[in-house]
Amino acid sequence: MAEPESTTATTSASLTFSRPVFAKLSPHPYLLRNLSPADGQPATRTNGRTPREARPVQINVSSLSHAHGSALVRTGDTTVICGVRGEILPVGQIPQFRPPSSQQQQQEQEQEQDGSSAAGRRELKEYDLLVPNIELATGSAPQFLPGVPPTPLAQTLSTRVYSLLHATGLVRAEDLRVWYMPPAAAAEGEQDQGGRMEGVEGSGEDEEAREQQLVAYWVLYIDLLFISFDGNPFDAAWAAVVAALKDTKLPAARWDPDREMVVCSRTETKKLDVRGLPVACSAAVFLEKEHGEPGEGRHWLLLDPDRLEESLCKEVITMVVDCSDGEAKVKSLEKQGGTVLGRELIRAFAGVAEGRWREVKEAMR
Amino acid sequence: MTATTAPEAALGVLPRADGSARYSHAGYTVTASVNGPIEAQRRDEHPYEAHVDVIVRPAAGVGGTRERHLESLLQSSLSQLILVKNFPRCLIQIVLQIEDSPENDYANTKLVQASLNFGIMPALFQTSVLALLSAAVPMRATATATAVAIVLQDGTRKKVIDPSPREIEAAKSVHVLAFTSRDELLLAESEGDFTVREWDEVCEIAERVCCRSTVTKEGIEMMLDDEVADGPDTRHFLRSAVEDKVAADLHWK
Image (tube, rainbow over all chains, first blue to last red; front, side):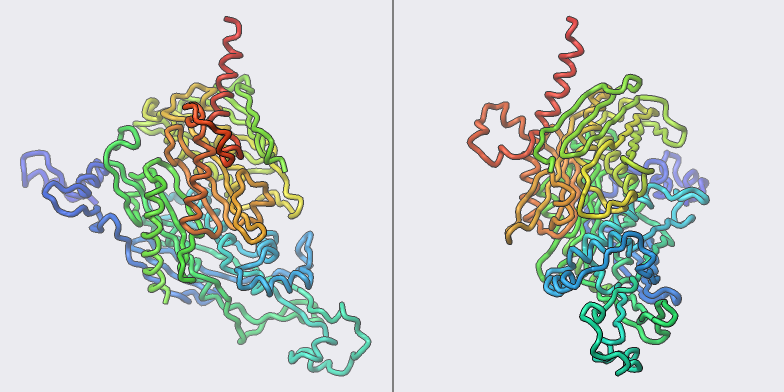
């Protein structure tokens, strides 16, 4: 907020403004002045960070008691909470359901080292087993007004999260399947459900009936709520999604043939197996000339931009990297809105993203 | 698939719009109309520059979050090309109607899909640039876009230009890159699993597809380099499409 006008008026007769007033009146020169100080000092941003300095990440998991997994992520003044809730989707309710064949399952076993299988990805996508939704709460930032439909920003964010969830193969369809072993086969297994039926039906069953049946899927509703919004929403949202999924424990579910429904255990839970740790890293390009031709003058790459910086920068880059296998793997790269970042700068940005990955990995522990 | 067919374009297909274009390539057909500069709505009005409004309409159904994302990508890229500072408080509206997209016979295609659609981005990009040229909206440069997929074939990674939906589904990674006519990288969207080196190679291929006409014009023999022979020459195509239209319009002289 601006300081009382009387202080500025009385301290000096000339037209000088206090910092907040200068920032409000002409944000671009204000940021430019901070980035290029006259007396040879190092460039700092208006928030006190150096251009390549990101805000520290704080992650708190399991803060929601009614969700199966949750995480609260805070980077500076951007705070987002993510809740993951699993719901049972019986296969009978899926239109055009195609049961995965036993061959496919064998293939999946083989491909397991190779990340998620194509069939599993198809299932996740076709039956919509992952449902992310992002809400930018009223009051989290001044630009979000109450009672309006989801803003383009919220819609774009949820598309990006949805697409990245599928592309990274973070959750595998295998973990979301609920199986049922028909009694004859279960007699040989160690499931207590089949144990009671032991010896009732014996040798007469043919091979097909003994196979495990897929009875239902878990659908994960991944809800994100921005409590406070101060720039760089995607990085925070994605970190929250990953942390919440890593925290997710789904109840053990089994098919009850008598009631013909899936029942969940009250006590027994199974942790969701999340593969890898993709971390998003965003930066914005601040140009020296506000009104000049793009490409003229100096430019600064501002890592983890805040709301003021985002409003002044047009060109943004987001890189999602995963270094958990030792080698840096890029999962997604998005650059738009300008021509400053060429091939060399983007290559160099991968190093910055790796540094960010290590920071977030520390915070996830 | 239809990926090998040459692109087709027609300018000024809609009589009432300021400018329009229809473009079809790799199974995608998109029609665009451009109106502008027109009066902006109060909330879109910017005191120093024109507001660029992009609307993407899918072939069937109403637009969802995916279309919003495509719109935001196009909006941020096109407002870099258009001389928006020349038209303060104005609006330049671009409406893109997807008419046809190649179907994937191997999957249940749903009407509303939330995931990113990499296949259609180049077609949308080319159509909007052609429509802007047709509307004579002042621009600092034109731009061309292309899609490249890295697919795993017989144990080796192969790069496919303008991949089909089936190839996109099976691909290790999919990339869409756009270059301005000054050979600057305007847009880069990638998804999948790749290294920075692979991206760099993809970037080089995309640059060849998008920015080649400068090379051929300088008289460098293009037939010797057989790698250059694959993929369409997008920038040259854009230029010839506009030249044809101008020639047809000035025929009476």
